[in-house]
Image (cartoon, rainbow, N blue to C red; front, side, top):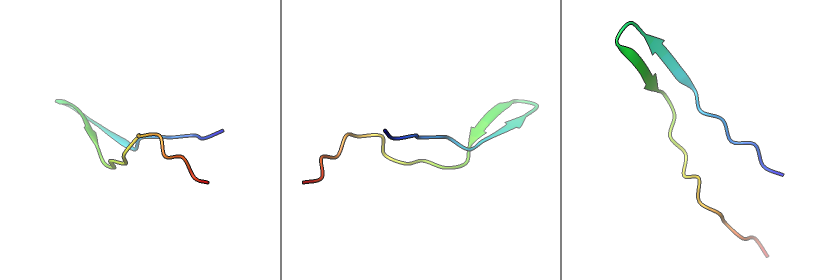
Length: 29
């Protein structure tokens, strides 16, 4: 299995995502 997490900073105006990784499926042979 794969675990994908986002690092989010919560601010007074809402939230800001601090990291961005592609969440596409990659098949490794």
